[in-house]
Amino acid sequence: MMGPGPVNADPRVQRAMAADLLGQYDPAMTEYMNEVMALYREIFQANYHWTFLIDGTSRAAIESALVSILEPGDKTLVPVFGRFGHLLTEIVSRCGAEVIPLYKEWGQVFNPEEIGIALDEHKPKVLAICQGDTSTTMLQPLEEIGKLCTERGVLSYVDATASIAGNPLDIEDWEIDICTAGLQKCLGGPSGSGPITISDRAAELIKRRWHVEKGIEPAGFVPGEGSRIQSNYLDLAMIMAYWSPERLNHHTEATSMLYCARECARCVLEEGLENAISRHELGSRAVVAGLDALGLKLFGDQSNKMTNVTGVYIPKEVDGEAVRRDMLLHFGVEIGTSFGPLHGKIWRVGAMGYNARKDAVLRVLNALESCLRLHGRPSRGDDPALAALEVFEECQEDLPEIEISPPSNSH
Image (cartoon, rainbow, N blue to C red; front, side, top):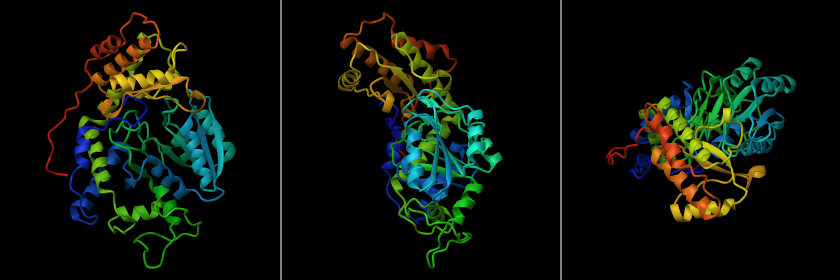
């Protein structure tokens, strides 16, 4: 799977998911929970105490964050530069909050000055933004945006589902209050678990909204006077109590997904987070070189392109869906189409997670070239796989080989 995600899971992750189940209060299970919290603090680059997993897809993690901090009428600034910015506006509106959208043409991102002006004009309670929007393949710079929010007393929320572990992301240094992610992109796992990290400032707000049910008040949580959170399952205060030392029962932890998320983080951190990002950057450069050799035009502002997915215009002389179909049918390779104004106009070629490696990049480029020729587009004469291979060879260190280690008897 060489589209915008999901991608093929690392074999280590698949093996971890097959391990025996444990009871949710088994000491080994609770120790795994503590280990996951520590691992994802490193992944998020944030030493935030409240770092854990939401049992659900990345969208469940997004909703848990927004439903837990937003009350009806709260002003929420949402910079939109692709489909997933529109998703944030929808979720915010379902919370009953007042949505203040900012729009960019798809293929562009916001600069800090634009965000600062909007914060001063609208004075929102929360800013909600995507880091990487795979619908446009653009990466929103965040280094200054969290600080702009902190200076103004605005809570910042970031959806990093598509970008984490493949693009630079330093949550604590950038002063982001809440960030959520998913496993199915650069982390190299399947969809189904949503890592989240929460600053102390945001955690206090969440705790103030905690509505105590008779007899179940967790230690240290202060009842608030705010409106009741609409969701039980996605109520962060209750989930925080579950992940706290008190282990206040909220739901039955998704054990196999816990193993999965743990192994995803272990794989990245054993490689080294900076090395993983460099591997994605190298894969991106190789994909771009191969597409250029095919004479294809890239989409969007390349200075703000995600490392793990590349947008490319579909040549007018071919049927884009037919090419995608034949790549899957004849080569077993899947690339993506897009949404909204870009549907039928661009393909999205990914190289992320376990698939951000040399052989996968060469395979997708060979498949694309053959299927373009199959559908009547003349060859330019340049070999896209060779162009990509030259990028790999020019680098001092090639893409690290991803070792498939033997199964372990441990969880």
